[in-house]
Length: 356
Image (cartoon, rainbow, N blue to C red; front, side, top):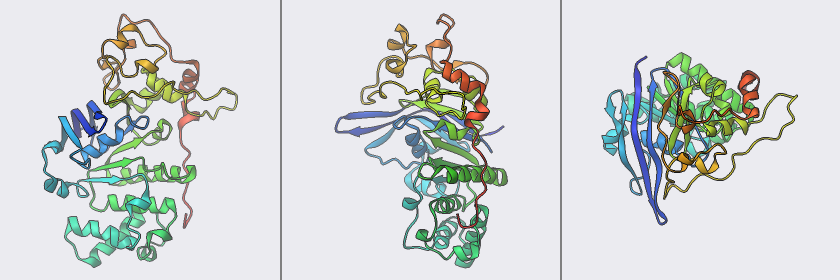
């Protein structure tokens, strides 16, 4: 498969009164055309900063790109001026944000808001833009689009507003769609509908997607590959099956163990990862996860581990994969989830009813 995006050694920091926060530290990943990559991690892991840096939306200053390349269709976005990025945002790269109410103008009809994006990048008339808006509302599953194109955001439910935001992001047929926690503000039923919608849209448009989330459970039905981030670094990357069935990093084990199980036979309490993420104004020496890792060895506190190769698609940044490391098995709760992954993680497909 040909690569649409390749991020190499990306480092991003922010100057604050407390010091310079090393928010993203040497991140490497790629995205193939027509593929969905999920980036997962706790709040503060650097996943949203990474996605906003690709869009060049981080404020400079206080933020700055310290190093790295972001090759989009062979063009390094890190070297683009703000003016040059204006022509790329919306047209070639679309973005869906977490809260649809903050993404929509409450004083404008939704058709006009979608039409604005179409006119800016396609140079069409208002009538043609409105026709395109109706087509997009139809694509994202909003009933009676000819009538609803003339309504305001407050006349839509939360799930329908998010569908409008997705329609805006798709207005110019972008090659890449970045979804930054697009379902966090929605209830579980609507969340499932939006996830299924994004899968369906990708099949129809062949758009590449970067899906940002703190919830490992929502990605199993959506992503092709998963990148797990911690303390500004990717600590594990692999296909969905590799990360869910055969996780290698203790942090990934912790994320899996902290998820609720649908297995009625299990009466265990949800596990929690002890401690808190490190202060990235002064990143720790060695493995950033060492202080929270019950399997940490002496070398974890002294030397940062490399990214070990498990397969051609599976990599993990932990000294436990070194040939001389002791053999450590995932916790029993994680092993049970690995065996029953289909029951635990697969999100049910729910069909939206008219007006919901």
